[in-house]
Length: 119
Image (cartoon, rainbow, N blue to C red):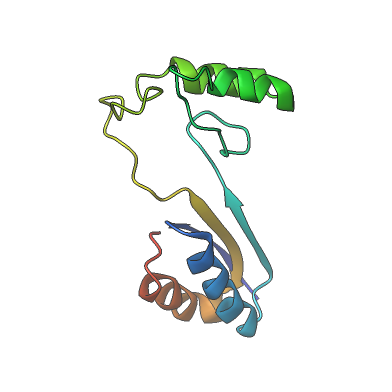
């Protein structure tokens, strides 16, 4: 049978996890949940606080991902006083990727949208 892919964005990993359980009950072919960020890497940056010296670039250098930390610290949103002026974050940094049979595609999309997912 034919398959279709779905890319759905969520604000919280818990929302994506609850949807994944429902999709697994429908017997999806493939399913994954990932977090992404503007600067690559794991997306889990330490806070930037220039007063205490806690800089994202320094924290990332110790974990082996110096480039990601440098990008985050150099961005206009690095101080926490601005979102950078480029549209701001949408808050949807959790990506659910699924490959489903064509016969259950509409049902899978409905489940995702009812849980607050954005296609």
